[in-house]
Amino acid sequence: MVNNDQQSLEHKLALLKQSYQRNLQAELTSLNQVLTDLQAHIRAAPLVEGQARDHRAQWDMLEDVYRRLHKLAGSAGTFGFDAIGHQARALEMSLKRCLENSDKGQVDLQLVDVASSQLQSMLTELVPSLQQTPTTEIKPETGSSTVRIWLIEEDAELGRHILDQLTNFSYAVRLFSSVPDACREISLEPPDILIVDVMAGVGHLSPLQALTCPLLFISDCDTFDARIRAAQLNAHGYFLKPLNIPQLVNRLEQLLQDRQSPPARILVVDDDQQLAAYYQLVLEAAGMQVRILDNPRHIIDQLNSFKPELLLMDVHMPDYDGPDLASVVRQYDEWSSLPIVFLSAEMDLGKQVDALSHGADDFLTKPILAAQLVASIRVRVTRSRTLSALLNKDSLTGLLKHASIKSAAINEIARGYRQHYSVVVAMVDIDHFKAVNDTYGHAVGDVVIASVATLLRQRLRQTDMIGRYGGEEFLIVLPHCSAEDGRKRLEDIREYFSRLRFNQGEQEFACTLSAGMVCSVDVIEEDRERLLVVADEALYRAKRGGRNQVCQ
Ligand SMILES: Nc1nc2c(ncn2[C@@H]2O[C@H](COP(=O)(O)OP(=O)(O)OP(=O)(O)O)[C@@H](O)[C@H]2O)c(=O)[nH]1
Image (tube, rainbow, N blue to C red; front, top):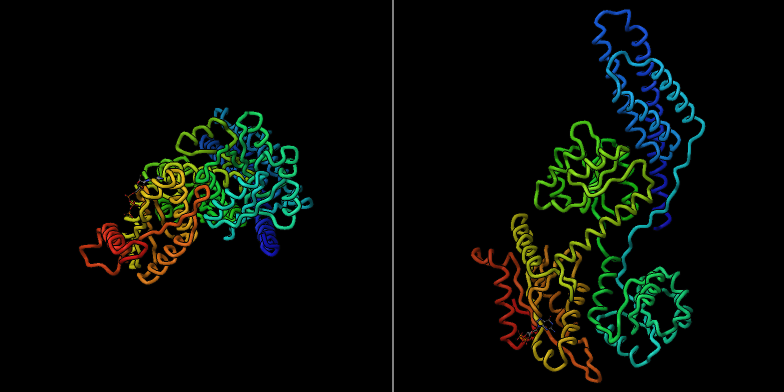
């Protein structure tokens, strides 16, 4: 994080804390006043008529104090007032026991006296000894476009082979013959990913443990001990020889996608505005996008417009409880697998389980430290992204599978017509691919397919959609793109691909691709519903016209 950003975060957190402290003081004073009123009620109660009503009023007052203490116990620690949070929690618990066990006769004056003196001690605690909120540097997820891969391979021939193959995928690869050689350079210019053949220095691997970049091992030893050693060195992958390059590239792409992945989108639902603002600040500082839902009645509208990847929700809210809202969210098919995390001061295990049974995935307890909140949310979003990738993405290319890209294309085209922006749809197909398979083998064919996928990802925008439509056919959708721009991009990809060189042993070869495209605003009314077919017809013309070209 840039220093200024960190300073600005700390400044904003300090302002939030000051504002919370003012409210806390007012809240404790107000609670103390309620207890003083309650003491007066209890002392006066036997003397007035209509005792039953007065008793109910006493219990209502006690219930009010209990609820407000519950909220305070959850928030005080978050803003650094740990001791007050703990005292509020202890007092909340003793009031809870009293509320649950009572026959609702006269409220016990002694209990109220004790509660009142505890509140006063919390107030005195607040004034002189402000505890410091632990300042936590929250690192945002960062992304960069140059990908440097370093390879440590003792066997020069194998090293050259891997380097050639990976260079085909537009990675900048450096080859080293030993771990000490590479380690000397790493301190000067760290790579994005390091690949190590364990044979290149089993005895020298320990320094790799300190690396911050992902580490992948290649080895011809498939024993449990070897794999445990790799795990202890925080390896992100373990690949056996003979090396399956597409599989390796697949993992590289996964790791890079994690690094370059778009910010996680989090919707926060909490009636406590200061707490919600605090969560927003902390999560945004960690590089996430956060929206606060002010009115729970608008939850579905917000889900549809913001498309969050996780819902962070308070359990107890004045009008609608978290579990009820979670049930409503689960009634909609499209949100049935959205991760929902409750964040609450609820200590009662039974109530936590009950909340979970209403469709939430997890329960975090308030107060929560900033770093703990960020780590919990990040881990859940990453896991949910991995699951969705497994369901919707093709394992060879990491692109959307046929059904997913088709439905994404149809939705995007419809949205483009609705909101009046142009969408380019293109079909891309490798030329004479059968011959590649027949001449160089299926595994080499896979490398070629994976390289088209990598190229498409590298040359298109984050907002474009790319899918593997068939064996060697790809469907791409470019929202907010004119026919002219779409054509330029496709020509660029076609040109770049034709320059790639692939290897099979000593043999080197190149491939070409053809593309058919259509722009949504350039078609007659009847073709609006069949843009995919129109793009496919254009691809057919490109093939008929001699291949290695883009037709529209
Ligand atoms: N290696 C590999 N080959 C695949 C995969 N999926 C499909 N194929 C092969 O892709 C080839 C497609 O060949 P064709 O449809 O005849 O097309 P082509 O040879 O590319 O010819 P044109 O498209 O007309 O230029 C077939 O040989 C399929 O077996 C895959 O996942 N991996």
